[in-house]
Image: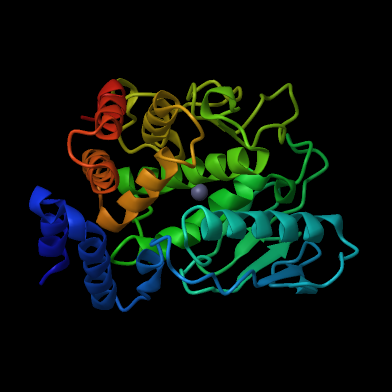
Length: 330
Ligand SMILES: [Zn+2]
């Protein structure tokens, strides 16, 4: 059966008891077609055996454009460079979140080693996912930042989630362009925020709902992005919060404000803690996306994921649908 057929079957009400297995089969078929690993989705089951465990390696590039030299690997005592230790801790917390909350064993779902380069000359005053490793740059003395990105757990979790998307979205991840690119940025912001809330054990209604809070000099703003009020995080923030502000041809980091706000609305309306219901729904939706997904398709994927997890007609399905209606996507 094609992945699409399996997914349709999984969503059919008569198949309620077999939903998990059908969804896993859909993911497996899609994954085999894309020659990628399958255990990421299969391991969603709470009865799955424990994960392989953390496998981190942190390299220090000392400001150069290279991979750097090994500063600290798994289980070793603290390195001399505080940024290497900050990255070690943040990647460990992100690993723990994925393993214990979403039952995903690392980036590829198979226990992949998480490699980070700190003080990377590729990313001064920045953080990025290279396609295979996390790059965290130095803070430049005259720049707008007061802290290195390595110290921001939500930013580190955002970048690692770019890696997760490569394996969790059938077909090799979301495109970097258009609405799919904005969806990728949004899913990374959403999970980045949730990892931080989980680490702080915050309830959704009391959380900061920002990415990169405290990184900027306060004269520039409080954070890089706000999921609660897109467009208000810093002085150059141009994020819209609903489709009436959608920027045609806009940067993915701009239009991501719209799906970001949908998640904020859904998570706060569901109440409790964002990693209990909202994040599993959004994470589950990844397997229902395609590389060129639109906002409307992503919205439908979260509604379908809520249906898979909580059943048709459930309060959760209603809340997720309404969140996307409020940002004018559905
Ligand atoms: Zn990003």
